[in-house]
Length: 115
Image 1 (tube, rainbow, N blue to C red):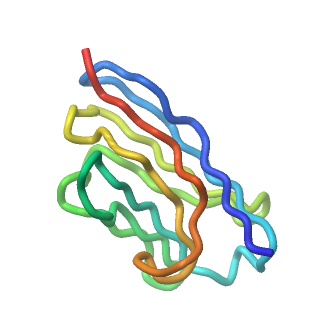
Image 2 (cartoon, rainbow, N blue to C red):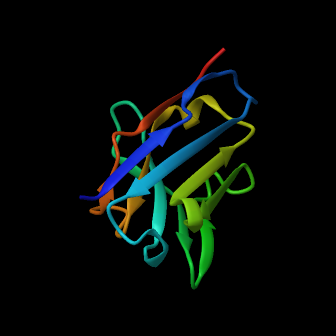
């Protein structure tokens, strides 16, 4: 079955960096658009980035210029390199297969930005 496993979260100070990773299995990874989304405490799901093989990579305005999403189809992984982190970036981050709102996603990885 489809499985997505995120990792790399943790506690980081404002201005710091983190790299998230997501490993996929149970589907033909290279055929699917992949997304990063996040959910801050007490808030709804927020789209962060989409990696589409035809249309490239797009970002939410809130992370543009600070986050870089990438994918490595040969090893069935996607990554999110996050820099210049802010307290507002605190959230559980998920990778999502297919539709970013309704697609399969993993258990998430918690990123906490705090001094």
